[in-house]
Image (cartoon, rainbow, N blue to C red):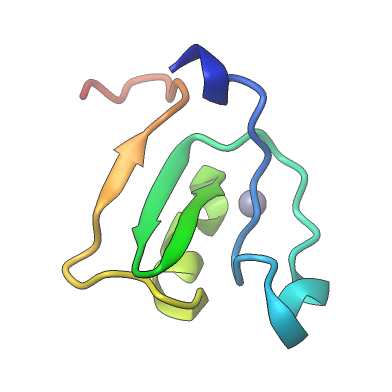
Length: 75
Ligand SMILES: [Zn+2]
């Protein structure tokens, strides 16, 4: 958990290939989206939803890990 403390959001596209340019969010990542054949995608709360729909390799149903703290959210 501490390893991810400084992770930055890579949403909503995942920062790969031709869509890497759209990944310019630098907010702290709070969630990590598991992906098929790709490294997990760290995202901020704002980009969690969009990333599930637009990033490459997202599993369905989504597999999301909480890696940061969200006020009011109790895992
Ligand atoms: Zn973001």
